[in-house]
Image (cartoon, rainbow, N blue to C red; front, side):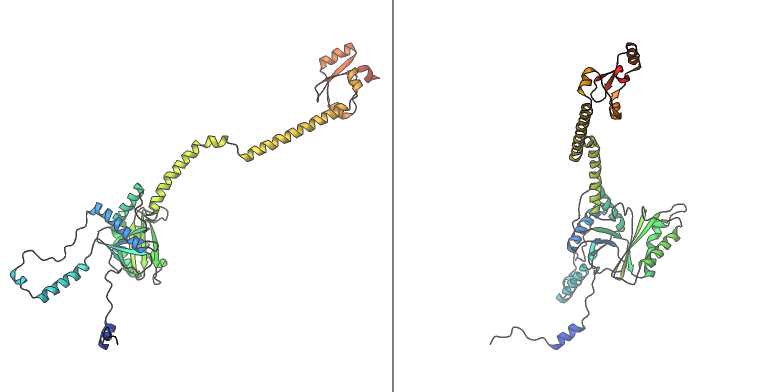
Length: 380
């Protein structure tokens, strides 16, 4: 028989595991944080990587490189008493140092929002909106795509619990330095609310509360959703409410890292296309489409058919006149149809013919030939 690989654990072990409290998530989205909300499309790891790269790049330009935390390191000059410490105390000290180093805050740190396609990057910089505006303005000017998976980058100035009283308290704290302006100076503002996985807080209660705080600071502030000077962002994720105040929100396509580059490049292509259209307008106007060409050919054929019919009618009218009268100059006209074919002679010619007392001439409209009519035959 084969030996057993391991012994069965005692019952006390399972009781201990059942009574053990779950570990607290140290990097969870909580009240009292500030940072950046990043949205993505199903690839959160790639979005976190893009956010770290972009934020660190521009933070180094504005605030300098990040200082590495040294933690609690031992001094080079140790006293003899410290060297004589027991091994157990030394091991315990090292474990405490490792635990403290794990919880040290870095400049940018990812947190757990417990919401799909939503990432919160916690930060220690003083003003997240300034960094976000510098990133979007640089992308707007340079037209360089620097994000593949991260879509929107929203700066968050503060977080609180998703309760109306807490939101008002945080809003008053954040709005005072911006919206408390001297008398006669007012801003246009707009409030945008997005709620995820929460049913206790609604838009109808949040927007009037925050707008009332702004109006109390200065009555000259006005709501303008088309061209606001400042946009108040309210992002609710489960039990946490995030507030942020941004500028040029609609200019930078709602702080979309990908659309900012696309729209700027599309505007340039549209301008070039308009110039090309103006240059080629003359060529387009002179160009004849195949449909127009066929229409012109059909019109030409119809005119030719009409001309042939006119010639046939002319021949029919001429055939009505006897050949003997045409040869002798005695052109007998009968009926109104024949009268229309003859053009009378001018008055001077009539007077000359009356003196002579012989004949008068007429011109045929169809053939253009001059026809002589004997007066004596008409009188008779």
